[in-house]
Each structure stands twice: as structure tokens, then as C-alpha cells.
Image 1: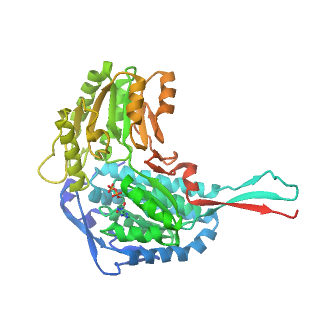
Image 2: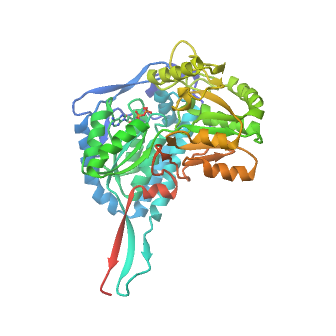
Image 3: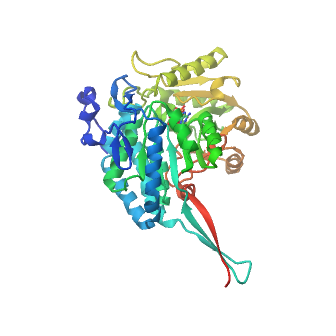
Length: 499
Ligand code: ADP
């Protein structure tokens, strides 16, 4: 796969870097038309690696959100009544267009989000895999017949789309977090209003452009951008015609939106924050554990909700593990997304950088030792050095909050029961990881961790074929796999009487 951009192109405007500049959209997509916000206000989008203005998108408010809902509501009747095969064919076409434009989509994504281009192109393909998967699953929303309880009755269950769905997505995966929701929604027969994150609306709009080209009918996919999510959020969570909210973001905002959805009893799917434990037992393959930690921790500059957040290493192997980890971390190259060979980009914005700095400073002030990094990188942009902290004390905030940055916090432990207690001592439960070769311990640990997903001798666990999601305050519902389709379907029980 070629994802190399000529370094001489780095100074070019985003439009000039693209083979197809039409992918760069700067308007809302409502009912198949590209439109300005009702007020005409716009919102700037910046490149986080150099702070340069990339463009402007509509600064929409609740009026624009209502227009999106109206369009989605208008399109629902026709879309939900099409055969699954027809919806499947359109999704398949969208998938093919995303894949054939993945280089351009990657350039747009890297420019607004900051991740290295190869990672961005990888995300686009990962995101497209959900569209491909749900193009297939669209045809498998089976109902069921139930053995009857009365001789003159027959009992059945059919599945029907829930209706108009509001999708609110984050900036860390600006492409995949959208396709992961839109694809099952459309497969089920729902129509959607998408509100992408303020920092990364361009990837969403480019996907909208390709959905149009794929022939997905007007009003089925609507996109409303903004610089202030609050008024749009209020509209989407209170409007009676929106029947479901699917949200990925922070636990704080997820709780707020869920409470607002209570007013009209909307269904909710929530993918919220994590605080993943990553546990290395003394019988582990240490090289594999280091490799797993590198992908889990430093991918996307540590800005993923399943990033390892607390790294527990059993005392007998602690020093050896640290040496190996240090060697790998020292090889990471930090830089802008279009620099050749870069492994780690900037953080998304100043607030994110400040948070990482505060958490690291707090840990060090309480006694943690900085093995490497623990400072900003370079003089411009929002870069932070890949960091390792060791002997992080239990009361350090970095062990209880999601760091969302390139910081490994190492804690020593002695026994299995001690590490299980520490790992589960959190209100959230998204992902957890552990490395061991003992089959008994593997089963005990897999069952004992209070999380929705477990990586066992593996640091990369995500895929379109698995049910991604968490327990406790990490969320409700699943994305991906056959279970992801059910999130957008209602069950309807049919009782045939008078036989
Ligand atoms: P993060 O801290 O990762 O940015 P957020 O939960 O703040 O996570 O943001 C995730 C998504 O939620 C973004 O699209 C953002 O615009 C949106 N969001 C944030 N606050 C609100 C709100 N009050 N109402 C609706 N959407 C919101």
C-alpha cells in the first residue's frame, strides 16, 4: 500500500494535496443538498500539527439540527421499506467508493486529526470494513417463530428499524466512528443525522460526499457540523422524531445525553471512556507483551478509548519488561502526519495537551519516576514525548483517569488476586489486557476482569466482526458484529389468532 506524500507537498493547501478536491466539503449535508448554517456562521478547522487553518465549516445550531431531523424523517418511509438487498447494494457501493478514495480520505483525516498518514489510511480502511460487513448483515435481520402456547394461535417476531437515529461522534477516529454507526443504522433501515466532533468535521463530510455518489437517497444520511455541540445536542436528544441516540465520547457527556434522552424514552447506545488495565504476569512472553503494549498504548498518540491506561507488571519481571519497553519507546519517531517514518503525531488540541501534562506532573509530584519523556516535544504544534513513568503510586490521578496521551504508567504487583482487585477498582470497564502462558490463569483472568472486551496475549482487539463495547460506566450496547445490527432494530411480536 502506498501512502507516501511528497514532503514538498506538505506546505500545500489541503485541497491541492487531494487527487479529488471535491471530497473536501465545507457545508452541511441535509436532504441531499450541501447547505450553509441557517445563521451563515462558520467554524474554523485547524491542523493540530502546525496550527494552520484548514478551512471553515458551518457553525450550525438547533435550527439546522431540526432541518436534518426533518429530512431524515422524510426519507425514513421509503428507505425502511426498501428490500434489505437494495440497501445492501448501496452500502456495498459506498464501501467501494471509500476504498477507492482511501488515500484522499486519509490525507483529509491526517490533516485535521494529526495521526500519521499511514495510520489514517488504515483507519479509513478499518472504517470501510464496517460498511462492507453491514452491507452483508443487512440481509440477515432474521425474525423468529415461537412454538405456540395455545392451539389456535401462532406466534412470531419480526425486526423493524427504530426510525431516525442521531449519531454524535468523537475526533479520535473521525472516519471509523462514523461508519461504525451509520453502516448498521442504514442496513437496518434507519435514517441518520450525524453531528461530528468540532475538531474533525471534514472526514465526516467527505464520507457524506461518497454516500451521495454511491446513490444513497437524499435525507438518509444528513450531517450537521458546529463549533458548539450543546444546542444541537439538546435538539437531537429531545426531538420526538429521533428514536435513538448512538454516541461515542466521554462518560461525562454520555451521562448527560442519556439523561436528556429519558424525556422521550429514546433508545441509547453509548461507547464511553475506558481505563484499560494491561497486566503482565511473570510467565508471559515479554517480547509479545511489549509489542502488544506498544500498539495498544502509542497508536493514535494514545488517544483511543481502549488504550492501555494502567500497566501492571509482576515484580519478578518488572525490570526486564521495563528495559525492553524503553528500547521500543526510544525508537518512536514523533512528528507531523506527512513526515516520512513518523509513528506518533500531535495531540488533538491544547486542552488535550494540558491534560496530559497535568496528569504526568501530578504523578511525578506524588513519587512516580519519569523513565523517559514527560515533557512536550518540539517548539510548535501539540506534541508530547512518548513517556514511561514507573512506580506510579495508587493515588496518582493518571491511574484513575483516562490519560488519552502517549504515557505508560507502570505499577508493580505481586499476586493475581492483588492485580485483579486493582484492575477492577474503577467505575468504568471497556477493555482489559493480560499476558500469561498459564491456561488456568488465562481463564480465571478472562472471567474476573470487569470489562466488555479482553485482549489475551494480544494488544490489538478491534475489528468489524467483533461486538465492541463496555460494561459499567463505559457504556451500553455493542458496535460491530451481528450484535451491532440489533442496536438499530426493534422487536415486534406478532400473535396470529383464530386459527
Ligand atoms: P472528548 O472529551 O473526547 O472530546 P466529548 O464527549 O466531549 O469527548 O465529545 C464527543 C462528542 O460529543 C463530540 O462530537 C462533541 O461535540 C460532542 N459533545 C460534547 N458535549 C456535548 C453536548 N453537551 N451535547 C451534545 N454533544 C456533545
